[in-house]
Image (cartoon, rainbow, N blue to C red; front, side):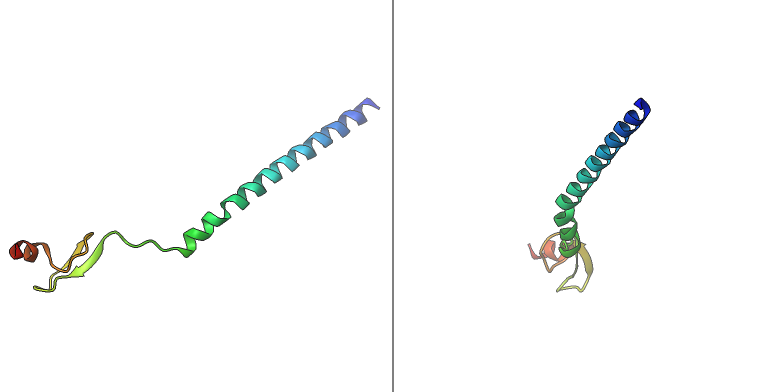
Length: 77
């Protein structure tokens, strides 16, 4: 009789523990869903752009908004 009670209590505690784990997992998934969606739908602009110089036609990479290469820009000043 006591073994049956102990087993039923063990089962009850195990079920409660499983329920708590399942609820915690569901809440974490719901809270992070908008962040996951944003990563797929929003594209970030690249920091380094490839630009062709207007004067000499040289192709270079820069993080500034300019149309002249460094040497042509230096000559201009």
